[in-house]
Image (cartoon, rainbow, N blue to C red; front, side, top):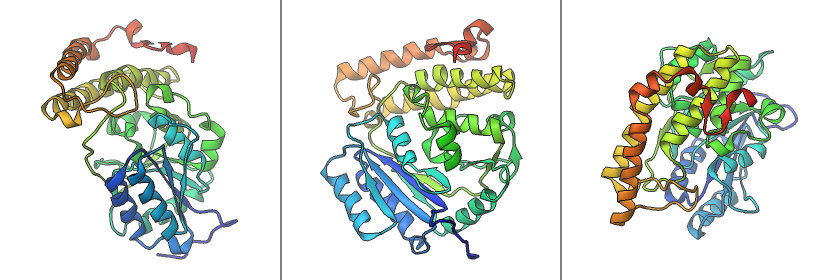
Length: 329
């Protein structure tokens, strides 16, 4: 790796990891980072926001912070929702680029060296593009593209927190309040806004792998990825940065390829089921009554968001969401 100089001892990248009871998956995530030997050059800092976890996760966090000087642990005063915890850890980053990483991710061996070179190259541009880190290959990796082209390629993938990054200056200027956290898509909203302003470069490698979690929780998939996602897409349609056709196709693919499959998977494997009413605690739907309630919710939402309805929603309905008319925001 070519030598990279720093200004004012500021790290080049802050790896920001929100967690709550991440346990052994968090340990594997941290091991995949520290094993790459990047901490000795002060180019990277790792920040873990421990969202009031149990003793096992607390012990893991403290162990890594004690062993590696570039790892630090922060804790909010009270338990936060997942989106708010993500915003909390991003605000604490000192790096030129803030990179959000989930607590169940593995970073490919040797990939951080190339990532640092990539970030350094784009950080020196007069107009820095947004940087997106995909989980699946696209045909546009490495190209500077606009929002409409990006949404055509990315679909629902930007909703996963491990794809998100933001230049620190932009974050503190535009996203400090972490708007839309109540919709469970604050990072998604921030990503779309960055791309509308600056365009985006899709990172040319797939460097993140997700470890499956046994427990899920926090929200209704259909509410978040149809209602709330549609609301955010429509804001950019109204701005002229996104075409109506692209937004419509994104809604359709999200419903067919993401929401329905996850609900069905959760029914077949109850340990992956989603508690629908609150973010914490995560609950496993084990009793027959709970599973019947979950099944009824799936059927209701399948009818509510049937593919034809997603494809051919009237214009008035597309501009309306659970949170009111998009023109008010």
